[in-house]
Every structure is written in structure tokens, then in C-alpha cells.
Image (cartoon, rainbow, N blue to C red; front, side, top):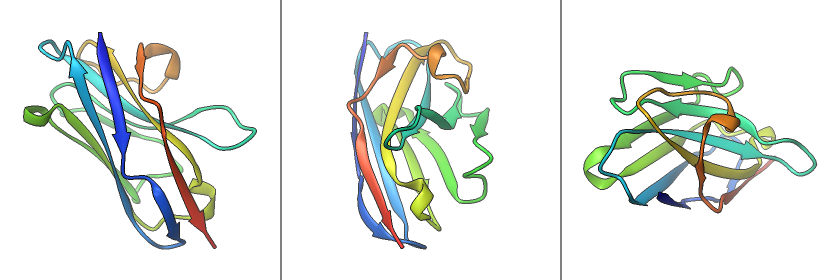
Length: 124
């Protein structure tokens, strides 16, 4: 199993930036892909970005393209989400997720392990 812990959330003004981190522990000696999802109040959890084991494949939701960047540092078992030009609609709880296997996928149903989430609030 993989345990995931997110950090880096907070309150920021529109146009600002935040960097989220997700540290993985447990069985990390095999390939696993990572993803970021978010959930706004009253809405379903939605895909934000995903990265393959090798980092060769990256997917981004259309709503964040050009503003958010996902990356990973294997030596630290950590994945990051750099968020720039933040908008109030980006507000929500951000979750990191992991799945064993090398492929990055965009559906939350393909991920087996989830962090507890970190709150991101963007004020106008």
C-alpha cells in the first residue's frame, strides 16, 4: 500500500501562486502513477493533472492548462502541483492520488490510494 500526505494549501489572492506537495510512503519500490484532483463544495471530485511513473506522460485538465504544472521527484517519492494565475474557481480541497502501474490516467476511479486533502482558497 501507499500512504499519501499533501501539504502546501492555503489562502491566496486571485492571480497568485501556490505549490502543493504530496509525499508518498509505504510500498514505493514499484512503479506508480500519480494524480491531482480537486473538489469544490457541493461538486464532484474532478481531475486536475496526472503524471506517469517515468514523467514522460502528463495530462492536464483543460481548465488548468497553461497555469498548473505537475511534476515528480522520484528520489523523494514526492509529486508537486505548481499553481499559477490562480482564480476563485480553483478554490477547493485538493487531493493527491496514486495507482500502481506506469500509466497516467484521468479518472478518479483508476486510483487506489488517496491523501487526506489540502484546502486551497482563492479570494477575488
